[in-house]
Length: 103
Length: 103
DNA sequence: TTCAATAGTTCGCTATTATTGAACTATTGG
DNA sequence: CCAATAGTTCAATAATAGCGAACTATTGAA
Image 1 (cartoon, rainbow over the protein chains, first blue to last red):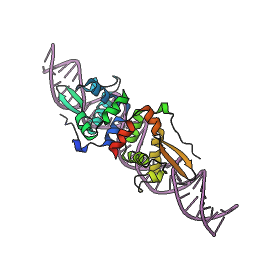
Image 2 (cartoon, each protein chain N blue to C red):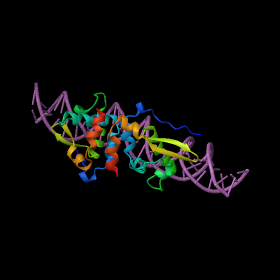
Image 3 (cartoon, rainbow over the protein chains, first blue to last red):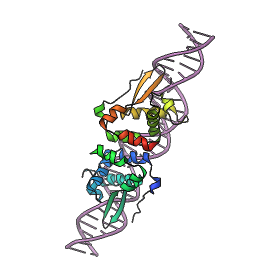
Image 4 (cartoon, chains in turn yellow, red, blue, purple):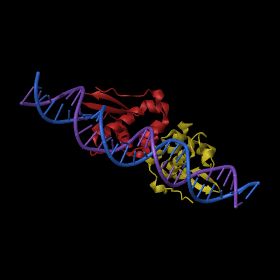
């Protein structure tokens, strides 16, 4: 099976976070994850069902590698959750401010 | 001479702002511009003199087209200023929060 | 006025990154 | 065991970034 790459909290950078969120699809994915306050599968968190799954998979990889989400395998699905506490700890108020304007 | 492309305030999007700031060089340029609270020429605002000027020119174009800076020609130099009020009006608190963590 | 210096842009090429269909893997229900 | 489901990986193409070289506009000096 595949191993997910999650950076440690120390390796999360501001530029990587902004870059990851600087795409409308990924911004919406993170907004969905935060507003639902739950773990969502990739397809559940997707903003639109017409996005090819290989494209979606790539977007989730970028969000993971930026440290924005944590992915765990739960049966056949992948559960995704925003690493809110890690990011809040490193960049207080950042995520809340961004998501406020993304809605 | 060249005409600069500046989007109207209404055309500034959150994703474009985040994407433009999601690059370490551009993030530093904007930080420099805000902290100096002045119009700076491209080379003055550059984070490092070793960056080729064609690369720098491209970074400034991206910042302009995202609506983050306004460029005016002043003699042989270009004066760049952050469009703070426009962005603050559209996304209150966003720029301040980002720059706070970029320093 | 002519020339050289300065500040940036534009061009053209290369390198990196994104998109997506197709094939593949892992898990589960029947 | 088989089919269905969720997602990854692969391979090919498209779009974007980086940068040297050539170009443009402005200005100061001879």
